[in-house]
Image (cartoon, rainbow, N blue to C red; front, side, top):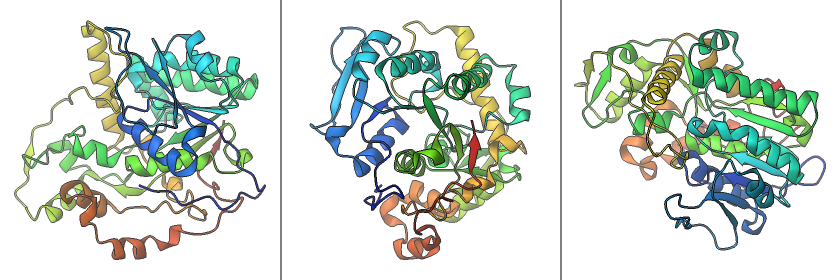
Length: 367
């Protein structure tokens, strides 16, 4: 994954220069860090990492030596986080929903440290959708996400204590297929009935595309992203489309349609500060939440379909190439090196255009 070097913004300056990332060891966090390193000098990037809870020691991770890594005992320790944020102008959260209780603490620490903007960890379907908000109140996790989005908007827009930018990708297509999170079992070539029959158009992104969007948003004119929810989409899909793509790429029509079953608990973050002794009630809520999100990834809910996101960055200066569903599936099955790069470049040349003040037109939503 690589973002091209920034040439210039309309103002001639870089809007943000000292990003801080929390959750850099997670599945998406690692991708965001790679994207940031393509756009910023390592010396200007800060990370907030957890110490080992069992021994108070420091986890061993491979990061460029020039990156400023700050280790804290707990993400919820406001004093430690505030100290780590000194000199940063934007805080990017890549924590899982299992650590969502830390978000308000992080924002308060960012405000105390003089951080200008906060990017919440809300890389999911559009929780601002009315149908989602009605259905989501039945689960404590989705309800908490709705309440937090509203609270962040109030802190930023009404109280003007900090700015925010929320990137809304809907679904991580590559992650959900690779891990079997949706229910497609690539190894056994099985798929649940409800997914095999799903025919409602949905939108989604790869982890790389999402991470690049996060990094690019920091390079855009700040007024275009200030207090906005940015819809992004790399491609469209249906459950039937995915099954057809899997059959084509695996050269097999022997995929087995299986009875529907609830998903297993999973996460896109490897360091969510899990409880030492998992709470059965919390585990049940988590499983229900994941089933709820997966449903939005395949039913006809507006929260999982953001066609305006397909226009995002269509006139942008940065080359963030959109993969088709077939190319994403091929990358998962055969590896990224086996994608027909010449055909890929030709198919996506329309996304390599100069930046303009209209870059986010259609995909931006006021806070």
